Image (cartoon, rainbow, N blue to C red):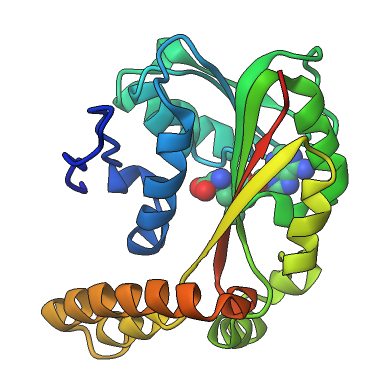
Amino acid sequence: MSEPDASRPDGHSYDVETELLLWWEDYYLPVFEYVLPKMGDLPGKRVLELGTGTGGTATLLAKKGASVVGIDLLPFRLDEAKDRVKHHNVSDSVDFSLMDATHLAFPDNTFDFVISKSVLVFTEHSLTAKECYRVLKPGGKAIFVENMQHHPAVKLYRKFFLKYSQELHYFSLSDIEAITVEFDGMEHREFHLLSLGALFWQKVIPISIFYRWTLQTLKSVDRYLLRLFPFLKRICWITAMICNKEV
Ligand SMILES: C[S@@+](CC[C@H](N)C(=O)[O-])C[C@H]1O[C@@H](n2cnc3c(N)ncnc32)[C@H](O)[C@@H]1O
């Protein structure tokens, strides 16, 4: 678990239970540390998670006090998700439903937040974004944590190890701009450029201390590079889009 940021003026702690990120945790951690504070206090808030899978994010948000609905197209994933929320004692705060993110069976203006992690890439982006806008309450936010197209190492990995990836629509910067059009405002941040190099010390020659040190160093280098050369965002691995519906 990451340390709460004691320096935050509002006194909130935005610690993320990394176990609930489920995969590539070290890489999704900074992304969630960026998006969770945008959600503010979660008790009393209604959240829709698109493509909840085995329910990691739904559980994480329910543990922070939100009332969550997780939808997915795959029943066996939802069965696992139900086990997960039970294990974490948040079954009462989470409902799961078999549903297509591009045809949401909820009335307009239902949710304070919609969130997705690696899901829009499976769908027609603008169709899903339109549905999210519709079901958001005025003043609500849609948060899309999605994978990008052009990181050279990730592209190679997808080509050789993720055959189904050819079918997916990963995000380019212009795809991000296209999502902006569907909302009243948007901010986005891109993550992970050189930091993927740390995986050498995890996957090739596993030496934990080298992995940790390289990851921390390269994450700092990435932040610096992206500030200095914003055009490098194009070849990042992950984007987080925070989209607003006006009051
Ligand atoms: C890569 S997994 C991510 C799962 C989960 N968000 C996580 O981070 O662990 C993508 C999930 O999206 C679901 N999915 C794909 N297309 C969908 C759609 N149109 N509507 C709802 N869920 C969808 C898949 O069934 C799968 O569970």
